[in-house]
Image 1 (tube, protein in one colour):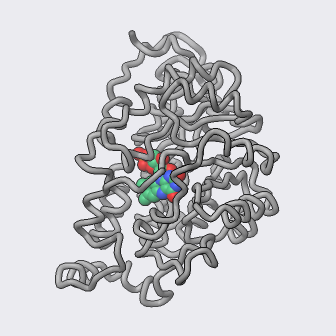
Image 2 (cartoon, protein in one colour):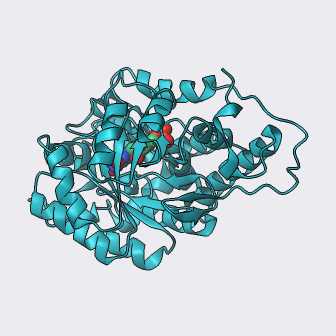
Length: 374
Ligand SMILES: Cc1cc2nc3c(=O)[nH]c(=O)nc-3n(C[C@H](O)[C@H](O)[C@H](O)COP(=O)(O)O)c2cc1C
């Protein structure tokens, strides 16, 4: 019926450590909950007696049409839950006519996705310490035809994710009594892993001294991040990337102004889904000020806590061009593979279309600030 149902199905299928890695946030998870609460707090002022018999849910994102004001957010290491989850999500996005973002620590490679998924593809770049490797990833994404580079800037170090630490998810999976029992109780997941082994972070092959096993993700990728990267370095990326350049992880209006001055095309208002700084502002709360600072200079997207189609409408009314979905679509693919990913998008699309009709807005492109109750 809804995204929460898909979340429940995903939880039933996955070992607890894996589900918690997807579902959890940093420390007390106040920002994780805050993201959702902020979307729920937004109240709408619907208009009536508008002809909405045929609504148009499509908008322009970065100068090209998307069937929804939505793209799929980058989520790394999701092969821990299902082999080829990246590819399944990318194919579902292609079928739905929305862009897909592949994460740096994905378990399908840049080239695999480009060759096998189709559709509009964006690549998310982590600021890895190894500069040559970082620039090689950029070159690979460019050669493979990705249209946008989303540079994640809110990960100077890994967040303190206590669920992962308690579950030993960060370190190689220790077969404790509790882990083993948990894994044995999830036969569908176990069969996939037994058949094809633990997936690797294919984009990072060759960077780490030992092969990057999935279970090392939090520990090893966290150590490989460049905490000294600053605005001066954005220029290097701007020079190397002719496509759309987007900074992901902006919540401060001043940073949106700097992003525009640095030649970026867009920003994603994001706190990494509450997985980094616990205490960071909720993204729906931060969005209006960032959108005002961005003016017409930047495309503004927002993520964090999107679980209902009406959130797409709220995001646009608050000043974003569209949203990214992290967990909403991730729960879909974990619950039911490619069909589950499609189901998640369909649920959000259906709810969004209904919200447009009930708000008296015939075209998603016409959603405006006057729909938000003061
Ligand atoms: C399991 C998981 C892995 C993630 N991996 C990445 C990543 O590799 N790179 C990145 O920029 N963001 C990553 N994120 C953050 C998402 O891109 C996005 O900002 C966040 O999930 C949005 O919040 P939502 O899940 O409430 O929609 C990840 C999120 C989750 C849940």
